[in-house]
Amino acid sequence: MNRIIKLRVILIVILFSSCEKKLTDLEFEKNVMTEIFPSLIDSTCIDMRMFFNPPPIVGEILYDKEGNHIGIDSTKGTKEQKQKLLEWKMQLRKIEKDTSKIIVAFDPLLKDNNQDLSEDFEKHFNSKIFISKEKKETEYIFDFKKIKLDNKFLIKDIAQFPKDKKTIWKAKYDFIFGGVVSFSRIQFDKNRQFGILDGGFVCGRHCGQGFRIYIKKINNKWIIDEVEGTWVA
Image (tube, rainbow, N blue to C red):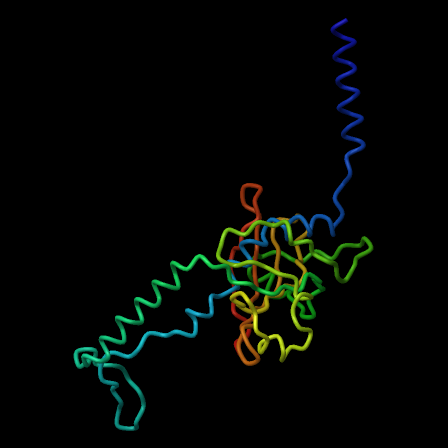
């Protein structure tokens, strides 16, 4: 009787294994993107209230004989300068403690990268990008709405914002609008242990920066290995 039960268990395991669906390249990429998405937002989006709020100068600006700026003598800071610095620090702490969500627009249509990243990939990981032979879509819609973020940012579909790129920055919102973030599709090595993609965060008509993002699998989890700047506006 026990042998019959064991045999049935073995048959069920074999049947289940044979019916298990192998992930396609696209399904695998979607799963990785879902896992890494919160980290991508953390690494690329910026609270512009802090970015556009540099500390005031305290001291006397020093120049060389040619008129080039060479430093600041902080020992000659005035009372007014020190007061402005104190006010700046208070404002910075206020922004840091602000629990209001910063809304970032995101285009969920992820497309193939229009740049060849093979050289950067091989240099960084000492491995080559794998080109799959299976039928490959050049773009897909990424379902990001159920992904929980652990930071101050909240992502909204860019379709909810004005289509005109100029208008999106002039429109009045009943929330803190941070900017627009975008990502390319991910490219992997043959063993699916390393990946590369591009990203960008735009905070105005002449404000933004681009990124080349390297990701890798460690202890069965995908993490960001490095983020390189590619452009600044």
